[in-house]
Image (cartoon, rainbow, N blue to C red):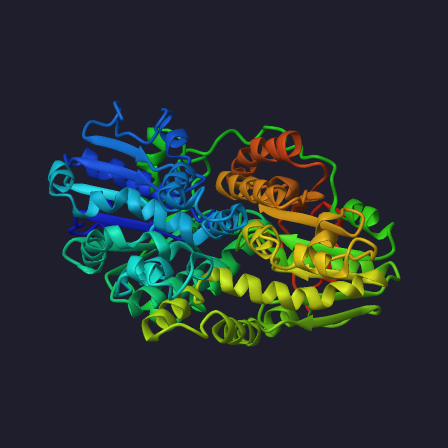
Length: 596
C-alpha cells in the first residue's frame, strides 16, 4: 500500500475537516476502511448535517453504532445534528417555559437555533467518545467526519460558571446564546478539549482541493486551531487531476494548470504541514471498491465514454433575461464557500449592465478578488465593497455598549467571545447590506456573500426590529422593512449557487429550507462549473461528467423552480469577456488577453 503521511502511526482519534465538496467524507470513509483492512477496530463517526456516510457504504446508518458487515472491524455512527439541537435546546428552555413570557421564550429559542448551537449540541453527543474509557477501549481508532470549529472549542474552554452568571442576573440568554447550557458539562468539556489538543491521542486532517478557495479555508482553519493549542495538523489535497490525464483535451490541460498554480500559491504555513496528494478518480466514491481505490495513486478504471452527456438547456442568460424584465430590484447570490458565488454575481451584474440597465454590484469579498474577477469595468456598472472588519467592529462596539453596560469582567469576556462567532460577521454585514437595499428601487443591486437564513431569523423573527418599528409607526402608516423586501419575490430574487456534486447540493438544499423558515423562497438555482455542460473530449473527464447528471437531475426535479447550468470553461472566468461567456451555457474559448 502507498505510504500516506496522515496515516503514519495514526493515533486513536482522527478528525477530518474542510469545506463542503472537498471530499472529506470520502477520505474519512476510505481511511476507516484502510485501517480496518489492516486489522484495527474502527468506529467512523459523522457529525456532518449533510452526512452521506450511509450512502457511501450502501447501508442505513443512524444514531446508534452500526457494524459495516462488508468490512470486518468497522462500525459507523451518524450523529443527527437536528435531534442533538432539539434535545440541547429543550434542556435549556424547558425549565423556563411557562415561567417567562412567551416572547422571551421565543427569543431564547431563536438564539439557540444557529450554527454555534448546532456545533455545541453535536459536540455534546461525541464528548463521550473522547472521554469515556469504555468507548476508547473498544476501538483502536475513532474517526470523525467533520471536526468542531475553533470558535466552538474556544467557547468550551471559557472559564467560570455560566449557570451562576445567569442566576445572579448579570446577563441574559439572548446575549449569550448557546453559552447558557454549558455549565453542567464543563468538566467533561475540559477533558474533551484536552484530548483534542494532545498529539499522542488526536490528529487533525485538513482536507482541501487544489483550488484557491479551499486552500485558503484550510489556511484559516490551521491558524485558528493552532492558536488554541491544536497543532497536530496534516493536509490532504484531494481530487488532483492525474498527470497522465492532463493534455488529453483543452479542458484537462486548463484544470491541470489551475491546480498547479493554486498549490504554488498556498500560504507558507500550510505548505509546512505534512501533506498528501490524492488523485481524482473517474468514478463516484460509493461502494467498497471505490473507497479502497481512493487512497491509491493513479486512476480507477474509467467508465465507458460513449454515454450521452445531455444537460438541461438552461443557460445563465435565460435567468438574466427574466431578472432584467423587472427593470430594477435586489439580486442576492447565496451558497456555501467554494461554489463560485463571486464569479456568478459578477457575471450577472455584467449581463444586466450589458442590457443597458444600471447595476450596483456589492460584495464582502476582498476588493482585489472582485477586481481580478472583473479585470476591468463596464458601462452602467458600479462596484463597491463592504469591509467586514469595519462592520464587525461597528456592530461589536454597539453591542458591548448596550448589552455589556451592566456586566462584570467575566461577563464582558463571555459576551466578547460570543461576538467572535461567525454569526456576528453575518449580522454586521447584513446591516451594511440593508443600507444598500434602498437603491434597488431605481436600479439593480447584485449582492455577493449574503446572510444565512439563521441570521435573517435572528434579525427579524424575535421582533426586535421589525415588530417594534411597526408598533411605533402604528397601523395607519405603510412601512416596508428590509426583511419584508427580502421576503417579497417582486423586490428580491435569491439565487442559490452550487456544484453538481452530492455534498454541495445537499448543503444548498439545507440552506433553501433555512431560508424558507425565514419566509424567503429562493427564486432560482445555479449549478456552476459543470463538466458535463462543457462537453469534454477526454474519456476520463467524460466519465466524471456522467457522474454529474444525477445531481443535476435532482436539483431540476426536486429543488429548483428555475435552473441555470453553467459550464466549466477551459479558461479561468476572469475578465469581462470570460464573464460574458459564462452566460451562454456552452463551452466558449476565451481570448488569451482576457485571462490576464
